[in-house]
Image (cartoon, rainbow, N blue to C red; front, side, top):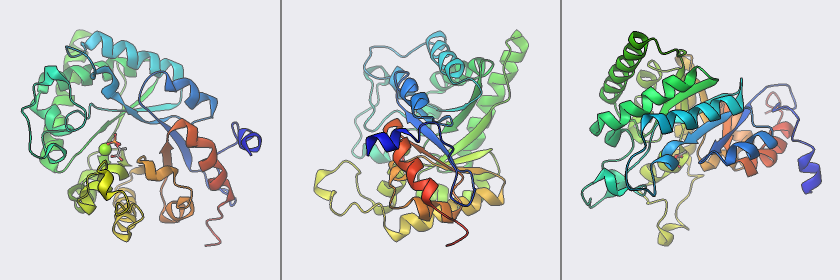
Length: 296
Ligand code: PEP
Ligand code: MG
C-alpha cells in the first residue's frame, strides 16, 4: 500500500481525462520544505508564517523574516511559494503582542485585523516578503479578510512598501497576491474581493467554524462539527465561481482539501488547485488521478 503510493511521488497531478489540478503543500515551518519536495508538491500553497512570531519574547525583525523567506524561495526555485501574512491572535498568542483579554478571541482581534492594527509589524513583514521575492517565485495571501475596506488598507501599505524599496534601489519582483476566503462575509462579496487579487485560497477550517458558528477546537462539538455540511460545499462552489468570473485561480487549502471522499466533488466544482499537508500529498494525488471529470 505504502509502496504503491510512493510510486506516485514523481507522477503528475493529472486527472484520468487529462486535466491538471496542482497539488501544493501546506507548511508551518522550514523543516517541512523537504517533505514537500520529497512528495513532489507543485509548490507551497500555504506557508503559515506564524512560526517566526510564536513562542518568543519579542517580535522578529525584518532581516530574520527576510532570511527565512529567501531560503524558502531559493529552496523551491521556480515553484510557487504562497506566504500567508501573519495570522496571529485567537489561538496564536504572543506576549509581546499585548492583546487585551477578549471574551470571544475567535471573533476578536486576529488575522488581518491585528495586522492592520499593528501596521509597523505588518509593514515589516510585507517588506521582508518583497525583498525575498527577488530570489524565487513568491506569492502573498491575506488571512481573515471580511471587507473591501480592509483590502484598501492592505493595498495602500503594499504600495508604500514597493515605493520605499524602489527609492532605496532594493530589487524585487511583482508578486501574485491572494485573499483567504474563510469568513462567510468574504464569500458573500467574493467577486468584489476577487477583483483585487490574482488568486483566492479557501480556508475551510475557519470557514466551517464561522459558518456553523462552532469552535473548531471544542471537543464537545466534534460530532456536530460537520465539514461536509451542504452550506460549506455550496460556499466552496460560490468561491470558485466568483474567482473564475474575475480571472482568479482558486486553491482549496483548508484541511478539507485532503479529504479524498470529496476530491471528485472539488474537481467537479472547478477548483484549480489543492493544498494539503505534505503527508497527504500522495493519497490526494492517487484520488485525483482516478477522477474522470468529463464522465461526471
Ligand atoms: C483555514 O482556516 O482553513 C486555514 C487554512 O488556515 P488556518 O488553519 O491556519 O486557520
Ligand atoms: Mg484560517
